[in-house]
Amino acid sequence: MRIQRAGERYPGGDPAAGIETSHAFSFGGHYDPDNLRFGAILACNEERLAPGAGFEEHPHSHTEIVTWVVQGELTHRDSAGHATTVRAGDVQRLSSAGGVRHVERNDADVPLVFVQMWLAPLDPGGEPGYEIVPGIADSTPYALPEAAAMLHVRRLEAGERTAVPDADFVYTHVVRGTVRVDGEELAAGDAARITDARDLALMATGDAEVLLWEMRDPRRSFS
Image 1 (cartoon, rainbow, N blue to C red):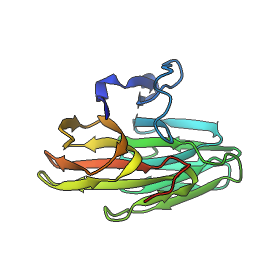
Image 2 (image 1 turned 60 degrees about the vertical axis):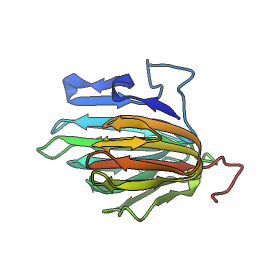
Image 3 (image 1 turned 180 degrees about the vertical axis):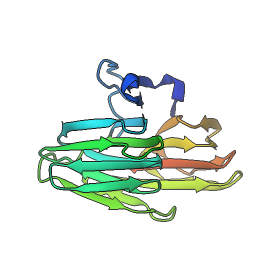
């Protein structure tokens, strides 16, 4: 298990334009050849957008982009014709496939906070795809077969425990609160990268919200 603390993330964005980004993996000018990906995950960015701020139209390709809104509302438009508002508790997925362009903005009058994760597809190319799952429940994992991955959302009260999925790779990101996993204390913004996870549990040491990515080696199947 490798721990990455919130303070070890790479700063980015454009604070003068109301965009503050915190990168967990190599990104832009912050290049680390030992921190390019974990399992299928290529990026895990914490984004904070001031009212009226946003990312103007930009391209993506050969990437599965999953967004979890923590606070506020995210306005999304893309070149495939989708125009949506993503709210706290919603899971948004954009399969950029052979290529798509999109806009992400905070058109509300309150700050927007979201976590965006990029995953490598098993088979690049194809046609772009898009969906929103509103108000996803703790007991309903979000399957992303295109990347051999599942997203588990856990909202825990202090003292509550939950199983860490048994998997080839598990990426744990603490959205808020504090948790303990395998003896390690994690706070908001911290992440744990677990290889060959077996018989592990996560316990909330305060009220917490956690994202858990369960990923398999593409040469193997989920058990």
